[in-house]
Amino acid sequence: MRPVCAVDPEDPVIPPSWRVGEVAVIGLGRSGAAASRWLVAHGVRVYASDASDSASLRATAQALGPLGVHTDVGRHDLDRVARAAAVIASPGVPPDAAPLAAARDAGVTIRSELDLAAAALSDATLIVVTGTNGKSTTTALVAHLLSCAGMPAVAAGNIGRPLIDVALDPVPPRWLAVEASSFQLHDSPGLAPAVGVLTNLAPDHLDRYQTLEAYYADKRQLFRNATASTTWVLNGDDAPVIELARGVPGLQRTWRQGHPADAWFDTVANRFMLGDDVLGSRDLLPLLGAHNVDNALAAVLAVVAVGAPAATLSEHLATFRALPHRLEPVADIDGVLWINDSKATSPASTRVAIRSMTRPYVLLLGGRPKVTSFADLAPDIGPSCRAVVTFGEAAGVIAHGLQDAVRVVRVGSMGDAIATARTLVQPGDVVLLSPACTSFDAFADFEDRGDTFRRLVTEA
Image (cartoon, rainbow, N blue to C red):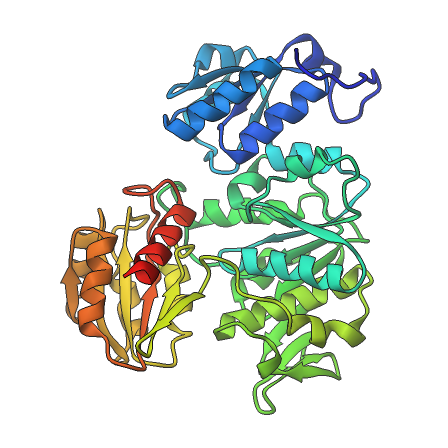
């Protein structure tokens, strides 16, 4: 017996056509499962499917069955999707995926889980963060700074907890820090953030987008519902970001490094600035890398825009800790620091991690590639890299792209890579897992890969 809440015929979130038909949810991961539960709880019949097949997906499907959700694992019923009253897309589903193409050809409305959730949480203040790199850390920092300032906030979206899951809370929070991917923005026609943050832009997802312009076009959907009252927080050092936001209605606030801006980092005095006011020294932020200076500046501007007091920001920055799988220090063993940056699933993300290294290091690269060449990484690796150890499906193409720039050791698995790295490092070095590839050749996701890395390093 499925739980159904009282149905409001004037519900602004659920159109009447959804109640007389069936809504198809594409993807049975965390977002798809939460969207299915929310829809069923609001009196909507649901068909949910996933092209992948795994024990966890089958367990999810089994749990949804008693609620009245019809499921398919390992396939999509494209005819059923084409007959749906609407389609809800999970974050990892690319716009050209077969079920979305079938829906589009049939004239079926497609919305992201994020868009549905934003409508359901219309009373909350949404701070939406997108960009190529830094989204998760910036999103988590925004939620942390707001909560520390007495403005209870939740981080959700592509960072881990689906936004629609927050909508299932009995009393949703007033402030929401939301990470949004390009895929989510593509199908979020109603998303209207109070504050939008664009961290940076670089080539990514070119295994799923035909052109860089198409990828950037989806990022620009952040601005689709811009009004004069919206605040946009922008990376003033990133020319594509400034160009993408050109002419967008609203108040634009920028951050920079080395140059005055609304928030900036004084590279001479080594301190954070909010306009003319000093926030504190770089030492107060316990995160590696210049890119995390950017993330902190973006978060500061975002929370100030919704009313957080600037006076306490420095002490709250000091209490933030690195997120798992994002330049996460795992262990210091015999003077060697092991760092888990499994979230780096593209060369652009790995480039950021490499630039954070201040000690000699061994770099672990591998997985399923998004690009056809890794040669562009060569100039960034530099002389402090003792060796690259490459593994997984991409091992060959990585070795081909980097072998003229650095010593490359090709192995089979991550376990082999870790064992090989132990023979290459010296006390004082770093072993950096920053794969520049997706994890799907050998792991469920980047978190599974990072957890495996942590376990293998600490158990040895």
